[in-house]
Length: 100
Image (cartoon, rainbow, N blue to C red; front, top):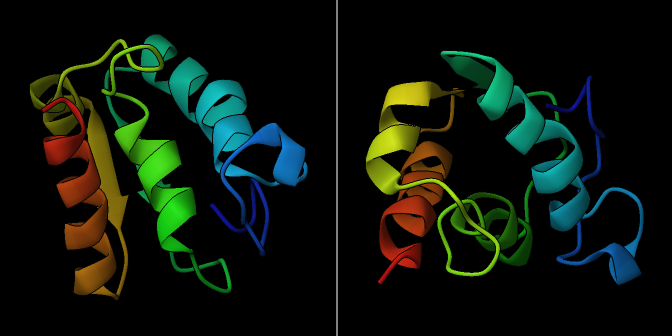
């Protein structure tokens, strides 16, 4: 993600700048998920991820009003790769709990 989107992603909404979660979700991630059977995200190339970025980018995929996917669909279509297992668990937590 750091190479293809931004090495310094941050912020929740487009008002926060061009490398925000909303831009990543709507301009990069959602089109890839719509077009591909499986999308692999390599997460280790960015400097870090704030919780607001992760919540909006990934939880927003299933949240009413911004979503369109179910957690089950994302578990089938999305592969998260990182040396940081806690980061991967955190992202799945945002996905699995956003629909509630």
